[in-house]
Length: 460
Image (tube, rainbow, N blue to C red; front, side):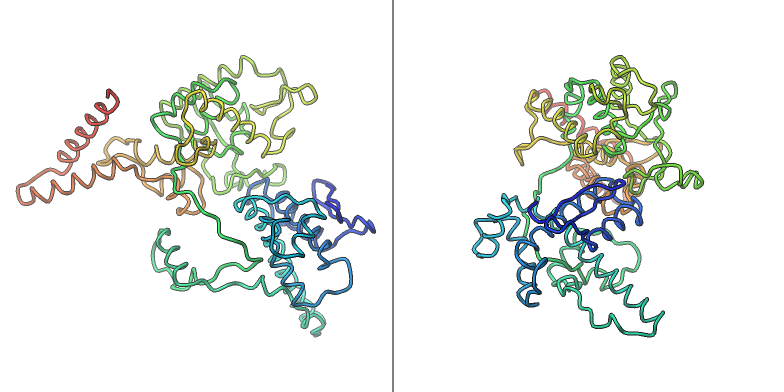
C-alpha cells in the first residue's frame, strides 16, 4: 500500500499514515471492535480479512483525495467512493480518469467480480459499523450533556438501508423456507453500502458426486489430508473445526469424536479460559458420522498416527516443518493457508481420478465434502422404523451446526432419484385408492425398482 501501512499489535490490526506516522483512529476503533468486542460468532478469518480490505480502501481514498488533503466537495467525494467497485474490477481499464490514475499509482491489478465482492463486503461492514457507532455516540452525548453537538454530523448516504425491488423480494421468497407467520416486510430492505456489480452465480451442484467420493478419499496421498477429508465427509464438520480437533476428543474404542463447544452451552465457566473458534451454530458434543466414511476416517487416523510428528501437543494435527515441528497447525498457520493446503491435496486426487467438476471445470473443495454430508444425510441415511429414506432438514441442521435452516436447505438437497421415487409411489397410491393399498408396500416396490435401475446403470 502506498499511503498507509498495516501492522498487528496484540493480534489486532492497526493502520497508520505512511507520510506522518499518525494512527488512523477510524480504522483502529473498527479493528478493535471487530476482533475483540464482538467475539467470534463468525469465522475466525473474517476480522483480519475485513480489516485488510478496509486498509486497501483507505489507501484508495488517500490516493483519490477523499482523505489526507483539503476537504473534497461532498458530491465529488461520494462519487469517488461509489467508483470503488470500478477500481477493484477494472483498474487501469476503467472509463473513469480518476479510477485509472489511482489504479496506476497504486499498482492495482483488477480482480474478478467474485473476489471484488469479498473486498467490498469488508469495506461496507466498516462503513456500516462506523455509522452505527456514530449514531450511538450522538445519542450518548445528547443523553449525558443535553447537547446536540453531534446532531449535524452526516454519515455517508450509501450506508442507509436500500429498499429492495419486488423482483428481488420475490426471488428471496422463492429461495427461503418460511415457518409460522412471517412479517410481510421482513425482506423489504437490504443493507446499505458502496454499490457493487452483479456476480454471475453458478447453478452447479457443490456437493462432491456420491459415486466418486470413495475413490477420492482413498486416492488422497498424505495421511493427514486423507484423515481430514474423511472427517468432513463422514461427519459434516467445517474444515476449521477439523483442524481444532484434539486427540483427547477422539475415543478409538467407541469410535466417537467429540467437538469443542464454541458457545460454552455445556460448560459456561470455561468461556474465559478457552479460545473461541469459528464453530458458528454447532451445539452438539459428538460428531455424528455415517458409514462407510466413518470407517475410512478411523483407518486414515491410524495411518496418520504412524507418521504424526512426535510432540506433547494434544492437538491432533501438528506441523512437520523444521521451524514449527510438533506445533499445532491451527496455531502455527492461518486458517486460509490450511484450507488451501487441503484443497491442493484434494485437487491432485481429483486430477488423478479425472473427477474435476464438469459444470465449472474446477476441482471440488473441502467445502464440497461438507455439502456431500448434507446430501448423504438427506437422501441415503435410513433410520429403522421410518417410512422414508433420509433425515429431516431440522435433524440435518442440528448435525451440521447451522444457525439457520435456510443454510441447511442449500446443503441438503433432495436427489432427483429419491424425489422421482416418492412421486411415483404417490401416483401408484392414487391409482389404487379405495382398494386398501399399503403405502409402505408401494414405496418399497418403487425403491426396489430404483435400486435395480441404478445397478443396471453401474453395470452398463
